[in-house]
Image 1 (spheres, rainbow, N blue to C red):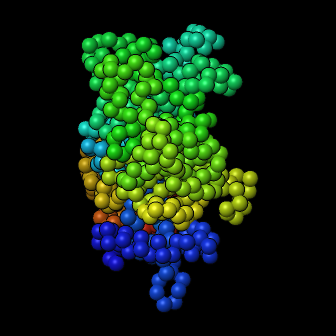
Image 2: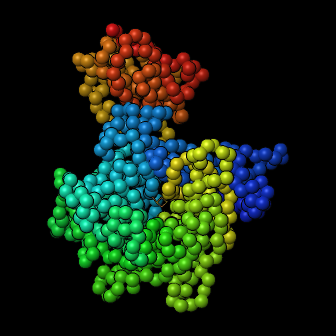
Image 3: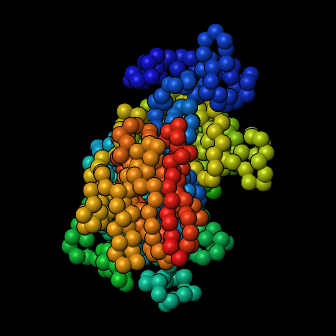
Amino acid sequence: MSKDKGSDNAGVTRRNFLSATALAGVAGAGIGGGLLTGCSPKAPEKHAGTVGLGELDEYYGFWSGGHSGEVRILGMPSMRELMRIPVFNIDSATGWGITNESKEIMAGGGGPYMNGDAHHPHMSMVDGRYDGKYVFINDKANTRVARIRCDIMKTDKIISIPNVSAVHGLRVQKVPHTKYVFCNAELRIPHPNDGRHLNDPTKYRTMFNAVDAESMEVAWQVVVDGNLDNTDADFKGTYACSTCYNSEGGVTLPETMRNERDWAVVFNIPRIEAAVKAGKFTTLGTSKVPIVDGTHGSDLTVYIPVPKSPHGLNTSPDGKYFMANGKLSPTVTVISIDKLDDWFAGKLKDPRDTVVAEPELGLGPLHTAFDHRGNAYTTLFIDSQIAKWNIDDAIRAYNGEKVDYITQKLDVQYQPGHLHTSMGETRDTDGKWLVVLCKFSKDRFLNVGPLHPENDQLIDISGDVMKLVHDGPTYAEPHDCIIVHRSKVNPIKIWKRDDPFFATTSAMAKQDGITLEKDNKVVRHGREVRVYMTAVAPNFGMTDFTVKKGDEITVVMTNLDTVEDVTHGFVMVNHGVSMEVGPQQTASVTFKADKAGVQWYYCHWFCHALHMEMRGRMLVEA
Ligand code: RUQ
Ligand code: CUA
């Protein structure tokens, strides 16, 4: 099979192969051989869940890096880690958090912060299908939302959400396109949070937030009762639905556990937009973001009682249902989106009338994923299992018929949180692969000390029976991931010279009369020294420059190589400085020349046989 050909045929071949060998693999070599190399002398042997050497994967996986603060790109189904995208974290290899370009982006999110807690990566959509443009992700630790540009696979915006504490659940509007990124603020705080009502939890509130996906400004906020957890949007552009716990309004664990029921709260987007447009909003403090009231009694929302402390919220890709996962209850509550129309039209008396099924699945249901055959897959955290169940059968059972809606339970290792099917949150859900993100690996891997890796497991769901085919140890903590067909993603290989990513730096160069594509010059503004240099493997355009101790140095480097994959770097030894400069990219970094003497700089991205020799001297006069 040609590696550059469309993968449809390849998929079929692999699939046939998988169905024949997966069971043998499980019984024999142990689950998840994970080997990428063929080991038979005759024909290259393919292991289940992997692809052959030199073959490209069929899907991109975008993985949250949890409290590492980053996003990772995996190839699927091989589960090879292809790239890491620093987002909320500092990264030594690329200089994220060190370069001026990344600092400018990070400054957009308040801070400076060194940490983040990324949970939910989701790609922008048009008409319920991935458009390959952006991936958005939340930072629970510092109440931020970031956007990754999928053409360059770099973070290009980070914002902090005002008036709230800890952004958790995040999803995009699917239809007609991703105008909004919906994000749930989880923790309740006084409004305003300025020292008033410190210890009066009855005054605490949190909000549901809509961020404009293009401008990355908060469009509006909705005050709610309870704490918001996860969220998802429908396939018609009318509703978003969030799980909402702590209906008690408590602040300690026992206080938040008292009620038998909490809610799934549904937000009516057109009504919220109309209220904002009609000026029916307030603002808080210095923030100008319109805030509307969505607490009980508001016609912008409906609170649907569900068993207490629900967690995951998932929309079925047929667009029919919101599903609230029970967590403490063994059930998943299935809410009909058609019946929500009835509710908002005033045709229903009780919000529970929108519930069309509540299948009992096992202990600790956290998240649900879907194929295109009407099946749902739910993680059972406490049981360490995936329950596969049929949605229509669950509805029939709820209506009193005697049907067994659970078709299979599969053990996973161990304690699964999120799970995701290939293309599973879109209209293109294809029922091929399921990834389960297990929080514990226990004995699955070599002992690496008290801190264990987690275990992302790959399951083949193309047949009638789920088959576990691969273990993927991962570093903290992939809460969530998406699996995107490679036809949807098309990154560039060489930077465009007019990329907005380095627009500020380019503008500065222009003011200094510099042509970045050819000049190697030092420009001095008092104690501020700008060093413009080019790089072509294996040479810096400038092998020395002279400054005075105490000067503030900005090195602006432009990589003139036009060859794919020839990335240079810039490290100033003993100055805490490193940055990546990709082909045709300009990058810059600012630091103090605080040590007199000879200070070497070198290229730290391997670029040439003489890469080691790619270096120069900063001569610092005392
Ligand atoms: S939510 S499993 Cu952010 Cu479930 Cu992590
Ligand atoms: Cu340039 Cu290594």
